[in-house]
Image (tube, rainbow, N blue to C red):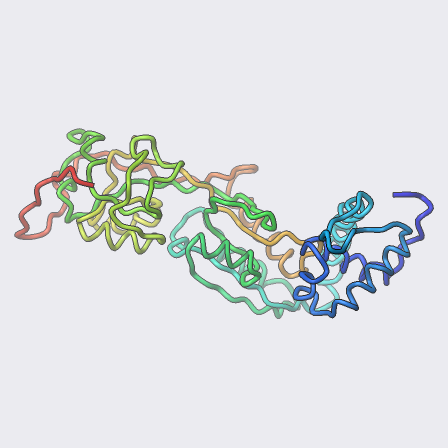
Amino acid sequence: MSPSLPALQPADVRLVKTFVAVAEAGGLSAAQVKLHRSLTSISSDLQDLETRLGNPLCRRGRSGFALTDFGRQVYEASHQLFAALDRFQLEIMPSRNVLRGELRIAVNEGQINDPGFVLSEAVRRFRDRPKNVVRIGMAISSHEQTLQDVVNDAVDVGFGFFQTTPQQIERIPLHAERNLLYCGREHPLFGTADRDLCVEQVVGQPMVQRAQHAASYYPAAVAGVTAASIGRTPESRAYLILSGHYLGWLGDHHAERWVRAGMMRPLLPEVFNFYVTMEVAVKRMAMRPAHITLFLADLLTVHSERWPAGATVAPVPAASDAPVADSPQPAQRKPRRVSSKR
């Protein structure tokens, strides 16, 4: 910026916050809900900031809202300003003042069984901070719903596997999750050892998937497979797998208890496997509330302490490829004929 610009005053920070909110909302009217202020008040702040800086920040009128080149420059510089204020809050303010606010967290069901998931440890570390009276709320939902809730400001921190990235969302990778194709004990393929199975025989079985069509990250062997049933959460897919009528994808930590109980097994894990990256999703903000910033810092600290430096992939147990002829079978049950229908 020009060296002739006036020195920044405390009141200017409020004006810059207003401008950033308008820029991120795409207009003055759209920013009213976020700022909880009148259109006249917001417009007055923009005019005051433009007067202070000596240049127009945006164009507004019948043609719509758009930042000027100078406005874009100010918007980018605002991130540096608010980052500096964030650092001040992190280093100084919590030691002097009570940490307040509400922290709303959403996570996919079954993640508590994931050896790479450190949410409980992160919450403990965060709650152990002195003078912390932050109220924490926890919700369980699908990956898709979690992301939508973060977008809609219904959730502050969302955990999951996210296939899309809305412009207003920031994603932070944590670790990888291995998914295998599982078969329930009641299924006719359960008693067949992997060495006696072929890919075509497996693909020909009805499958439960998260969506109607096989996702792009699924193994090539199931490309084009149409789901016989839809299960958007791990537990919903597990119910159908255990019914014996469907094969289905599960993270290996989701399936572990049923595998140990002899109620499920993965089929041809060297062929039917894929990895997804578990992530944290938060709303992009020029200045994030201190309690959310601190929680994210604690989360990443705990994650880095558990796994080797720089690692984002958690170790996962190897799938057993041992023959299953001696696996427990349901009493007095006649196996159904293997069908090639999907």
